[in-house]
Length: 441
Image 1 (cartoon, rainbow, N blue to C red):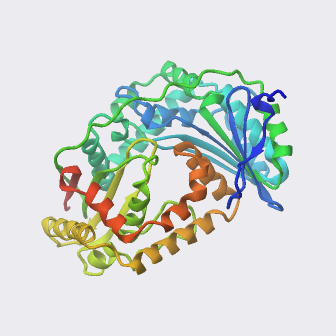
Image 2: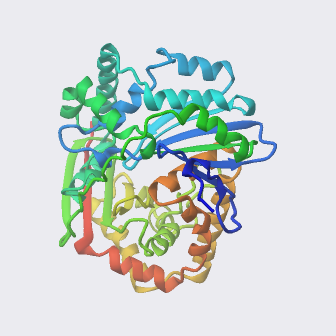
């Protein structure tokens, strides 16, 4: 018995899952995930590419974001503005965004109009125009965005934090790029980048809607099957050296508030330690892993809120942990209450880390955190847009299968494992602190 070619295979994932998906790969390497939601009134089409600021280097920072902008400017069957006209005429919505790990585009359309989304994404993948005038126009837009961010003291604090925490890895710069690079990137740079990364073998297509894979996949084959197969780009090799001592930076910029941000290096999503770290984040500041719409925690019952906001040490205090393809950071974020000395605010913030390192959280805290996880997960599975979003992101960062077992793995984390993770990763020698002391008007 001969095995059929990959493009003929369309197999549901093996075991019974919370979110049944059919996984399929075209001969040209395009990975397709189809999620059927019977009776859904709309369909969603997401295309995600394994390219973000992680794939850049000094001199071309911001290229991923600029290419994203340019891919709304037409090419092939689509003229400038046609994407918006086509989708709006059907009462749908569309957008795109760039992250450190990937770039994504989507269309949400009436269920029977999904082919419009497939056509748009196939043209975007193969036939972008990169009109020189549009390149100059988008450069102006990006410079305006950059200059606006540079006038935001909280953005400045976050940027300095990452530039200090990372010495080598491209996670050190923001997705928007550095101003000097945005000014010098030319059309040839963008076209080369596009042809290198916007290939079927470097992309994932997610289709969510009322139709079974047996109906969706032939349509996908019709729009994408003839696109040339190309070797996927090599993965960047930029391992960040271990941090061996605390790093500090202090900004003094015009601001009506003082900001304090702290980062600790953590492993990638492939490491089992991410699960107690996610629960640590949940206990300190509230999980945001599925925070796409309703279901987010208010934070009022969480440790940092009770210790710092209720006591008027901070007007905002939280933690944040977003696992990424490469080793990430666990972050503490605080807006200092007006009149509170920065040294005191930092001391009290770090005291909360000492507490959880020395004494495991209570069982009730983990139960509450897990309830928040389950609530967000339930909201995330409510509707086409959220499902497509999360399926694609998990597939790009680790795998969709990880999303499906995440709640189960988090439910097995013990209080002692949370404390162990805090001791292992949230240590002074692994810490970068950025303080922004505002110069008042």
